[in-house]
Length: 338
Image (cartoon, rainbow, N blue to C red; front, side, top):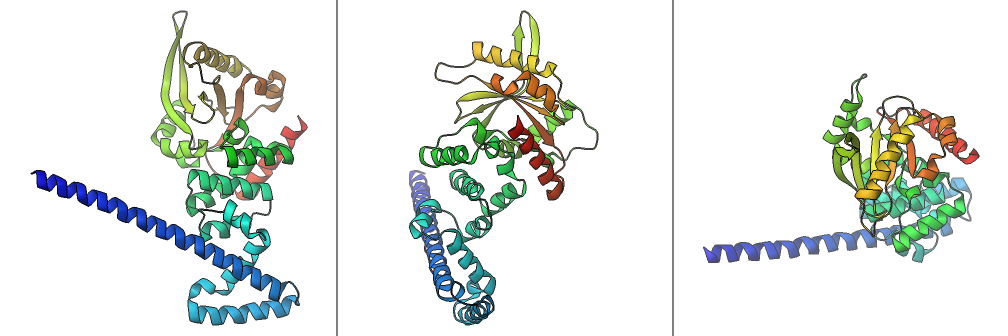
């Protein structure tokens, strides 16, 4: 019996080594491929595109792709050569490629280089690396306009740049990076009519996807957490803990439009947690009131941002990108005018 256990243990140890080696080889191959494509992009840009007529340059690149693909495979298709040129145009300094894109695959990079806003691109690059997004997840996050939905995107450009730099170098997370508006809950697959209890149950049933929408540093603590004040029971819909912010996050679910009385209810939950639940090295809790629709004038008059209370809309169906963009643009403009 002992020899069988020993063999099994030896097999597991060797299997771990094999998997690690294969992972290292894959990473090394990805790294070399990215550098190769950058260098090809540099040559094509400087020798063909930069100083030649557009029509002539396009013909040369097309001819080059035919010869390279024939000799070296489909990785050198015409479309991919143009991706390489774009890659060099966006990242003209090799040291920046090595420093900023370490660990990202060519497929990641092909998606990122077509984001025209430098700060938005940097946001996705940093989160891609820190949260280990695969290319599908990256595409989903971009399509759901994650950057535009963070409070960060509504800040002045200099502030955004500083916070991204701190996130990248010091792993420093701020509330502006964490909280979103609106939250997209289309994965819940709710019927046209549903109650707050239905919404809560759907979120709990799809908890993994909900946490991804919130962000990976959220940890689920409790559902319908009972708190008792002067012999009266109250129930917190959803309670999470955020590892980086070191604080509890209370989520209160509301079906309709935001109402002023929701603030008092949330304040009660936060004060209770601050008095009875948090430890010495933790920060005061934060509340998110998720509503189907905001009431912006009431929110502004209540000064909710000063009370660690966030009000965010949720969408149970993802609208067309055009409508989503219009909605977000309007929300951003209103927030900047406040």
